[in-house]
Image (cartoon, rainbow, N blue to C red; front, side, top):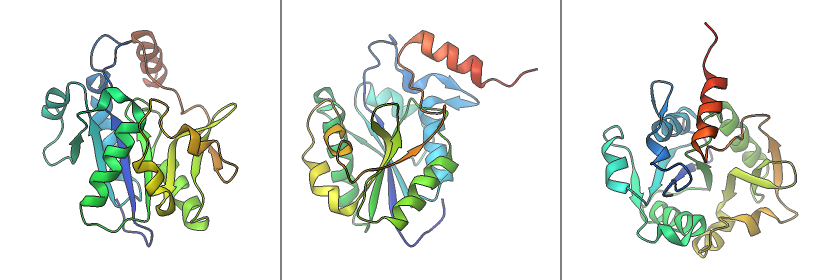
Length: 202
């Protein structure tokens, strides 16, 4: 990570139970590590200034597989949904005492997202400091998404399973395309297909 004038914290959401997968997808092998550790490494390679992961289901087991020193917070109310985990993570970041100008929220199950794309979001935020910078999907804006400090109070009030959906539906949101990199892994079939697609040809 590099220090930038704008101190952007990266919040990785990894609190779900992976019910459709049947086992913790955070620990599925990806390249030479796990899905979650891959996401952490991606975040740390970006221009963000700090990285924190929100855990929930299977928190202790997952944390035991992470590299030493990784910053995590366990959300005891993870079953309330993504919104609650976002609020939990933002609260922990603010209580750490570090002054941050924005929070970039990403998921642990989008392994094709790379640090260069995260940097695009951060750069766009530097030029539009009062706007949400989000990822363009077909008919909506989604994560990864960067929320400036002016939205922190609203993030702290989230408590549903729609994450920050209502905030991302506003007209002020700027969207950036990530191309084919915004694929989520929800099922074993998703995982196998994406893994095959990502493996280099021999």
